[in-house]
Image (cartoon, rainbow, N blue to C red; front, side, top):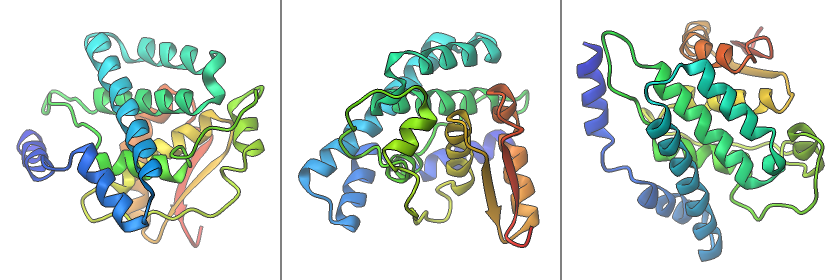
Length: 215
């Protein structure tokens, strides 16, 4: 039934395009035209990187693809908004590719709402700061992008667990230890298992922990 469930989910979310998702976000958050345009630009860049990786690597081994993504992350543009956008697109591509099984060979694509939430939480919808940093962690700290509390309201069915998993991967690659917490031990264990392969492929599984608020 995995294939049927995926087809039903894709049909339900078919109308959620990047453009109308950004427009809804801009309306709800009273974004200016400039803010709207930059948000849409970053979202489309992430999708472009995602599609490029899938087109090039659909039949390659996942560890090889991850190695290429890491090499690009370590390039000179790693401290820019563009570098982070490419990294996010790469993580989503690995998530899609590893989700294929013998029972479900269709790819699960990221929803626009998931990408918009990540872009907003990482403040990638703002003009990038100038300067150079020795690593992604120092860029996060120097630009104070993780100092403030950020909240994102995600509707039912739009994939909170996917957003958390991709964010955890990005931040752990940047050198941070990441705690993903939930009120439910069952949901926390489920989400951890869902992204376990991605964490393993990017070699960050020791830096990400899932648990409840009480833990």
